[in-house]
Image (tube, rainbow, N blue to C red; front, side):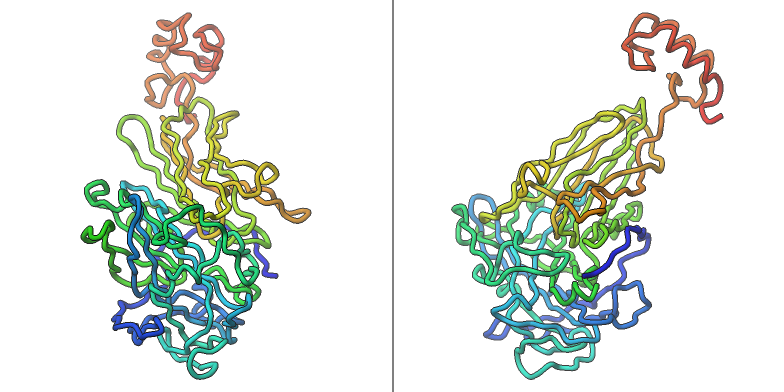
Length: 481
């Protein structure tokens, strides 16, 4: 079992691993790519100076291609290729017909108007054997051809068509991304009447891609590998990579997509938000003996006396998942335009798609899904998904506290929530009615002119009276004094 601390790290630099541009040729009859150019893969998790990982360590070395399957009812289906690399010092099992092989989810994201959101997901592709290629450097092959192990330094390509074949795609709900365990054979869930062309693949609304409806938007594909041996070795925090996607012409009921630039290795797609905006902060929050979350935020001055607070939370590999998200709001701050965004499960997957409900009480702004006790299949923030939380406030930002509530119960002594530091609205200066940073005669005149109404009520009792006057006089002078 891997071990995790509860410490958080903040990333202010650009992404750590950048693969070179790919020169993709035609696919072989079996669905593998004959050549994918080359990509640089730094050994380890990017925080160890390039020292080779101890044990097997599978990463996404490249996202080489996209396959458009078609559309139905305004929903389009796609799949993404994924080339894995074993950058550890031990061979990785890749055994067909057992649960000793990797599973591969595919995700799709959009950055629009300063909001980074997940707009599509697939089921998981089950691997079946590994070629021994050299995308990420020198390969020590585990054998010839497509064999049941991925050698040290070796790469294995799955093209987009192969990753989108529905018969090889199993439900996410059977995967424990923390341990890498899953039952095999996987369950073929009832498809809920899903049209064949959409079944189990990355589903995206055409309206989420339409350039006329999404001017200036930027898109990203993401792939991730989950494997029990990789997880056991503690090498599973670098298993996701992403790459930019361009939206092209609309044909046969769906938009044509193409890849652009390099695959950003060993980082989840939430880092693409920071790629485009250096004012975005991204950091990880680890659930002890469980998995990793990434939280990103951006605060923007609306220019009208209010500020917009935008948060994205990506669950990389926590099996306990998240069931609530909360931000502490100081007294006197008015919160408006509270919003939430998630991504839809599909093709009969057992998880609910009910949006999280928001509440504001006792100085805490919260979003939450049903509890695990109420509904084990509630719409928790589960592994390989990203949810968004947002609001406006009439106060500028300062450093404060937030809380990520865990959905599944943990073992005895395990935390039920994870605290993190973030920007939140600054405490307001009570009785500074003109917001000039000082309580003085101007504020006193406004209070006396509002006597008996609720216009200058600062203690929340609904009327401007002597108690409000006491607050003003007791804080007379500069707000920060």
